[in-house]
Image 1 (cartoon, helix red, strand yellow):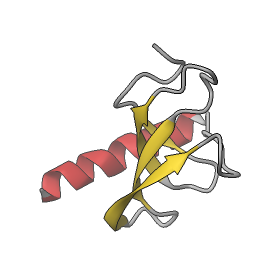
Image 2 (cartoon, rainbow, N blue to C red):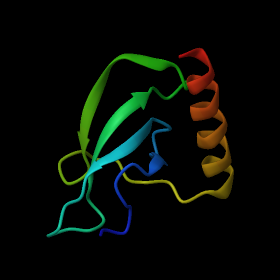
Image 3 (cartoon, helix red, strand yellow):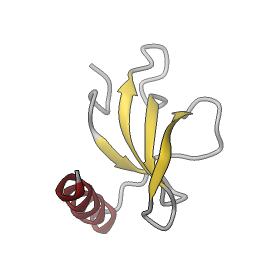
Image 4 (cartoon, rainbow, N blue to C red):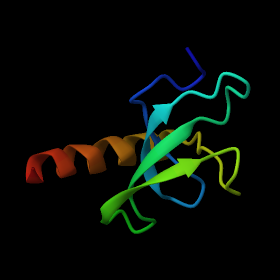
Length: 80
């Protein structure tokens, strides 16, 4: 298990929201994500793969961010 377990909802420093889709066992702080929402919290038409070892973004650790992510994902689930 990595620092961020599979299916963990995370926010990046650029405000995009994604879900951990693959753990990087050689770099536990660099999982692959499936990007779901853009920086304005709009759902992406097509999810995108975000490899934190290759992109110049990192995971946000803000408590405010975590609450906002939870609210956004809950709103997304209601529209499905």
